[in-house]
Image (tube, rainbow, N blue to C red; front, side, top):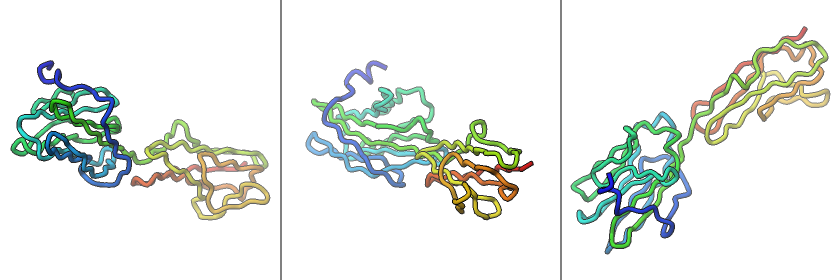
Length: 231
């Protein structure tokens, strides 16, 4: 392994970070001209478990230079030239006549997020960064969320809905029959936002099913149905 790694160092200067993201296939493209290479980036947002392959590529690299790929936060060298260093079986490298180099990440997972670095071993190593956000659809954690409840008339009840995902999901509540939610004597709403819904001095009019709905812009939106019964 050392014969492939020794010429590459993790840099502390001359870096560029991609900060804005949208759907596409490429994280970055680096073009090398006169011993310099300039990042020409395409933004990237990867949906966890839904993207089969992610490609990072360099173009116009002369055959006299080796190309290294690294995951910066993990301080992990992924590949150098034709050689895959990491033991991660989802990582591979290919090239097109040694002029265009590709780093492939198959079946992208949340752990793949972070800064990716490509480096060319010129006399003074040239380095650039791209950033991968892995967005994760919302999921409701049943173990931390309320289940069906039987409450005494006139008492209070707090319903809880814990959702995970990236970006952090927005949680809202609705009644299953679309009637208004009674928060207190002076407040009735069609929807309520937040992980908790506090029902005070419950009456039989409050009986029924409540929907906890979690969304974060990454499909699908998910919901949980909680039935409240009143004695």
